[in-house]
Image (cartoon, rainbow, N blue to C red; front, top):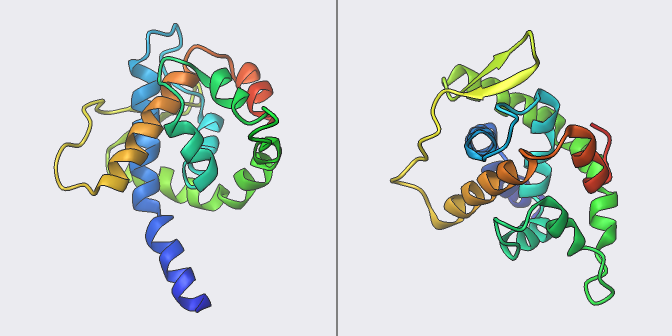
Length: 169
């Protein structure tokens, strides 16, 4: 049973999917109408923990793209939902997915999806055109969420994102 569960986790949470989602996050960030052109490298570490966690992903799906990051996080605190612990645990989820994020980033760079500006510690997409064919519906949803998260983060400073998500960036 545990072996089957581990295999399922590896099938979903793998560097190839992570590379795709990091690329779409950066593309969403860049396509927003923000003054910031490219996300800072540390910002990429929030993507996979938010998208690969079922409850946070469901709340992201239920939040309009135009609403923003604050509207997303506000949905965790109403007494009817009472899921504030999901945000509080985000720091530990970031630590748990750190290796996956790094491996995904390395694969995205090796695959020419992203480049890293080492002088500014920013990440730049080599293309913002989304993939079109051959993707399952669940992958399409994750891509949409990654792009949505990118557009939510673009108008905010890293400090504002950290305060909103209750994490240190």
